[in-house]
Length: 149
Image (cartoon, rainbow, N blue to C red; front, side, top):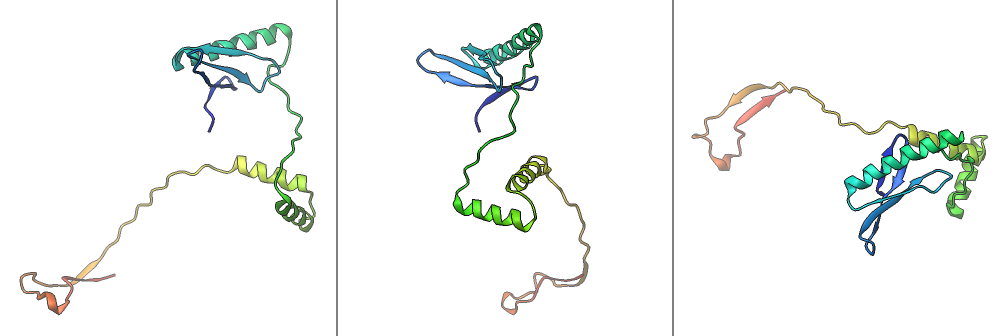
């Protein structure tokens, strides 16, 4: 996973410049180029947040939408075998490839995240017979307890 910063719905990249001995990044998914830099992660986060605030103020002054609009269209390279499987599936479902992919993406992003579940239950047993450990001979293979459910 690529390291990013998040603030007010904006994402920012984190890059390292060994030559300049600094950290830097840019706001992602906007129509402009807005960068920030610092010499520590704490300062980089602060500079990123300041860049977001400045960008939002500038967009407000210019009466522009700060978020880059997406077209809703993208190409996916999946290989010929998967493409054929997808096309056949879509026909069998009286659908289109586009609708099948869209439904799969919606389900992927809306599926519930795994949560830790702790199951608590109690087993009760009745001890029917016991043996004195001192009197048990190991070669007789007798259990020390006989448990009945």
